[in-house]
Image 1 (cartoon, rainbow, N blue to C red):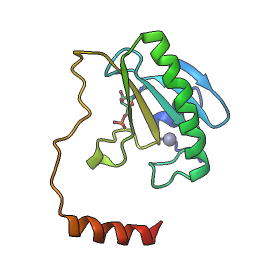
Image 2 (image 1 turned 90 degrees about the vertical axis):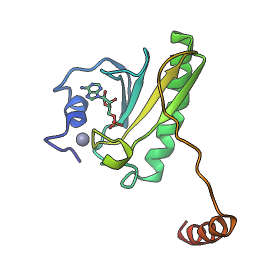
Image 3 (image 1 turned 30 degrees about the vertical axis):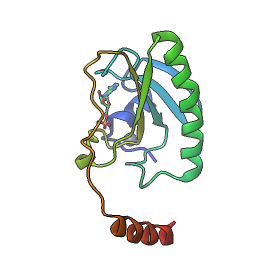
Image 4 (image 1 turned 90 degrees about the horizontal axis):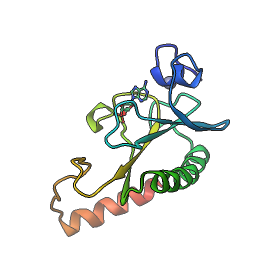
Length: 138
Ligand code: AMP
Ligand code: ZN
């Protein structure tokens, strides 16, 4: 499926230019135009899926397999010391382009990139109950 008003669908079709670093029948990997750091790449599905809730497991498997290869290429080229894999789903989670994509963000000591959160608290009974409920859904 392709969405006419979707910026990433337009990039997939070549209607909007992108700095493409890899492409196959399932994915295009491009450099983010507003990178958190130099080398920030996006793995984008060729098909339009809004987010992870629509993505099928087979495509997701291929995607992560490709992510390992791209991550190593970014590490070799940028000499980054670490790398964050980030994937936002829904406006509340920071998704701004509603076409599935995975961020690969190279990290350097002292950079000002932030992908962390304040650690919360949990209750052991609630954790156990929730785990039981979720287990049934998988
Ligand atoms: P997200 O907030 O997870 O939806 O991420 C969307 C990402 O797409 C942002 O990091 C943007 O900088 C990036 N982006 C938006 N438009 C373009 C574009 N035309 N080419 C490359 N990256 C883009
Ligand atoms: Zn799209």
